[in-house]
Structures are given as C-alpha cells and as structure tokens.
Image (tube, rainbow, N blue to C red):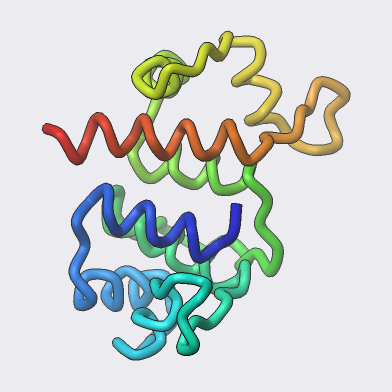
Length: 153
C-alpha cells in the first residue's frame, strides 16, 4: 500500500478535517500546510497529486500516537525514514491501545481470519526468526476493520 493510500483511509475512517490533519502532523513535530495535506490526499490520476514520503507518514502516525495517548516523557524516539506495513500496524496498535484480541476482532470484521501466532509474527522485530512481513492485503483488511468499527459507530 502507498503511504498516500494509508493516509486517505485513516482520514476517512476518523473523519479528520484538514485542520485536524495539520495538527496531527504538528504533534508529530512537523508543520505542514493545508495545500501539502490536500496534495497527499488527491487521487493518483490527479495532476496535483504528490507522493508522500515514508518519513511524513511516520510523522503523522507519531502525531496520532501523541493525540491519542499523550506525549512520551523523556527522550523522543528517533524518527523513521522508512516504514513498512509492519511498522504501520505497530504504530496504529500503539495509538489506539489495541490488544492482540482486539486486532484479531478488527480482522474478523473485515472478513479476514488471523491467528494469534500469525499476528505475533507481524509484530516481532525483523531480526527475530519468527518475524513475518505484513503483506498489503493484511494491512488493507486491518484498516478496513478499523473503518467498520469506528466509522459506523
């Protein structure tokens, strides 16, 4: 999945305004303009479409964590310059304080069966032997489950 697609889905799921999106970026330590947010949210076929860098999505997700959980005490974690689907899942898990059972329920809402062992493999460090890469379809289903739970409630 592209970073732009992830951003679009999160905006739709939680019905964030441009102002809210800008404030989430600011909470993640980066001031962005309404035009930048608008260009990232445009469809790929649009001439004004701008591809969002992984670093910017990391900033947005960090801002979402700060918004939902508050700013972390002490030294702030180093900002990622590269994000994979596993990292996005981990950051959303942290932001919404999701437990494994809740994540599995979100997958079930989206019509995807995921076991605890499979989920555990997605959340491991890449250096661990049981680590498994989260494919686009799994992230897409997770985001769809979030949408079904939060958009329809």
